[in-house]
Image 1 (cartoon, one colour):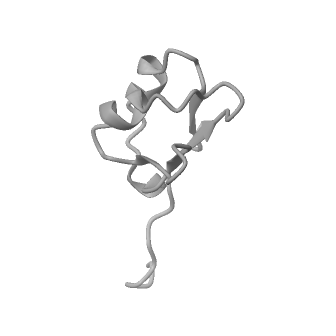
Image 2: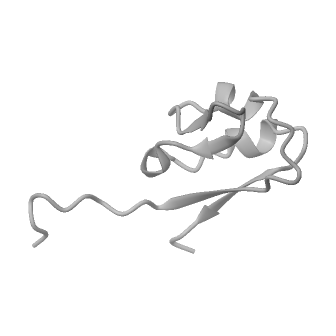
Length: 74
């Protein structure tokens, strides 16, 4: 039995290749769970990584192939 205050572990990790990313924000706009965000300089990062459902909308919409969604259960 898990302790009540223990948070579930993230199932997916989003890897962002900063060399490929042009900071267009398409991935941010298409994420249905608002996992991704842009910092003050426009760099994309996973703000709510634990909320990722693995749909890969960010991956499929990125014109620069700068994202990868990794399933930790595989």
